[in-house]
Structures are given as structure tokens and as C-alpha cells.
Image (cartoon, rainbow, N blue to C red; front, side):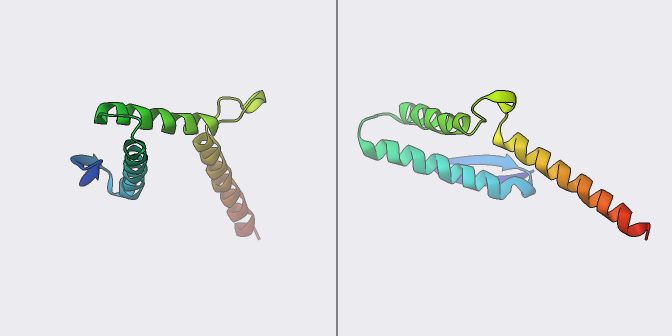
Length: 103
């Protein structure tokens, strides 16, 4: 695990992640920090805890809206689609590789 020091709304945090996940973690921290800063600057919400809750609700709402709306793929997240597509690519690469070897 790698230690990553970040700042969210002016407060310092030490987080741990795998080196391969560091870029994604930093991107997530930037999103949370930007969202919290925008809420704070709106002047409608006071207190860091309330700001954090509002940011979490906004981000969760966006995440949920990325799900398939209805039908057989309802409640399937975009990440699940991505993983399935990556699995299909790996299978295709394997099959194409086998076909090329038999020639």
C-alpha cells in the first residue's frame, strides 16, 4: 500500500491505496474537493459536515443516474458494463490468438 496525502476543503487527510489505484484516488479526491468547495461557495449550506453530506448526495445521485433506466439491464452499473466488455475483449483476443496459432 502507498500513503497518499490529500487536502479536501482545506483539511489534510492521509489515505492508503495500491500504487495502481493512486491516479483514480487522486481524481476522486479532486471531484469531492471541487464539489464541496462549490457547495461551500454557494453560501446556502454551512458547516463542513453538512457540506460533505450534500456533496455525497449529489455524487451518489449522479452515480445512480448512470444505471440503465429499465428493462433487462436495469440496476446494472456502468462499471459492470465496462468489466463485461473487458472480459469479452479478453475472450476475443484469446480466440483470435488460438486461430492464428492453428494456421
